[in-house]
Length: 153
Image (tube, rainbow, N blue to C red; front, side, top):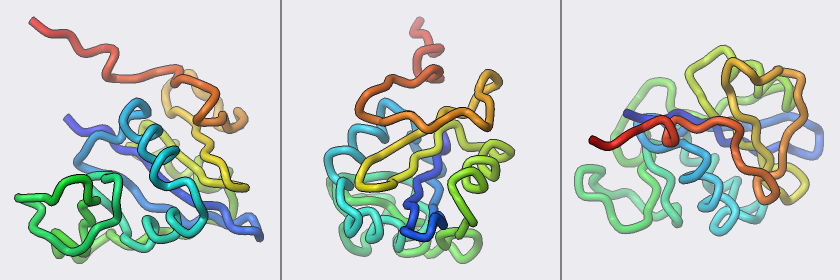
């Protein structure tokens, strides 16, 4: 089962450009450490966003490769690697609230935003007020995670 998340960057004008991680593990516990460690500059985040929607967040942007035999630690981009033609480009939003509200009404479970050189996030669940403030990725654990609900038999 995949966990969808959104990854965006806020510009100096307040607008947000964002992509979605689909068909992969978009959980906080997987995505947050990779974003913090490997996508910690504006330039790296912009490079990630240029890929469009992704199905795997790797430690490196990488180059075009066969998604069935992915290269270690490379992102798998829907357009670049899977030749997907629809709904793969980054989307633009008027501001951070517009970005969050769009995904609040969508299938994303976490929304990440790079703003002023730091990663922020909001979880999306039934208890999240859309007007709640963004939390620092480095200071907070998620309030909710499906991975904690899974059990092994």
